[in-house]
Length: 473
Image 1 (cartoon, rainbow, N blue to C red):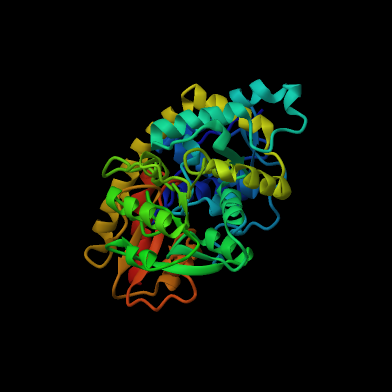
Image 2 (cartoon, one colour):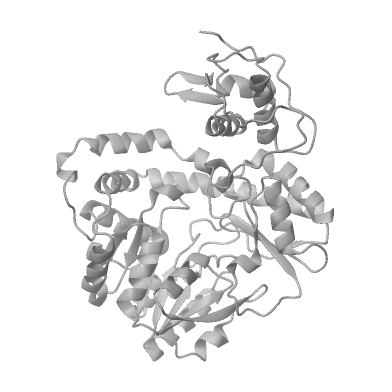
């Protein structure tokens, strides 16, 4: 077996992120046949030490090289130069840069992609241990309860009660295939075709798609960059339901305080309307303690009969887990189960069993606490870098929370143009218009959303510098 000596490996100059520089440096060695086929690359730990880079940066570069076919990963052995290189590569120095496909995982989840947690920080070894523990349970191979495993629902009962003050028993929890299925079931169980749904604008695009698909009437509720949700629009409406993200409104990043939450509960009770509470990013508040959930508050005053609570594990664990849950009033349980039965039937049993253990053994809570500290550091870094490179031209209008920031500026480049230019440079940012309903009036200011969850903290400053160069040029 040939071992590669990386002694002369050097990162090129320029403003690119360290991950990109390392990727191209290694690729050039392989393309020019300076590193022989089948030769073993240095371990990620060794290379990070020699180049004085973070290990996460090296891991990300290796993963991208694997994705593009330049190297291969052998479990338990390491990384090796591929025997057959991709036939579409461009030699170093070519003036034509090939754009990676948007379907590649490293771009979809790449720098500044909104809604993606730090995937490298997830404790995969522990998670695989739980998966393996249940993999040979024959009782999990057959059909399962539509509502979800009782072990997982019991674990969720304790977790939601302690972390979000949700008032619930296991028989009121329904495990779903992600938050989007939970939202679909919530709407179908409470509304009739053509009923109206109030929803934040700008707001969660996937929810708007569900509303349109199910043929409900979408009623936008403005979210102001300074005051948040326009409660007066809600209180003057007789809509059948309200969808709201009260803990960290997506994408404007505003929070509803206790007084505002109580007023919404009173509105729903008085008008016999439904509130669908999507407790998005409630785990990651950096400026203050999280407020009690709408569902928990409503239970305290005996007005929870019209509140549906929706959650998922995509942001606290990883996106592809695709497990969510509903907390519904007792009167809705059977109807929600009938809808889920028709849509998908039961949910993957082995994953539910592993997740139940993950929660019961305290690993979920430990991971959340760890990530809360890390995301807080990332938020402060990105806020500092934005202030440094954009001066007074751009401001952050979202609160210190969650996995994203929202930028606003009055003069300069159009938000869609900036997003397109950023995409050409491998940066994934979204214009605010992506989250707005087509009926939204034109703004006299520009805005984009940047996710920082899956961006290495060491890469944030150079990437913001690169974004600023696109902004000004």
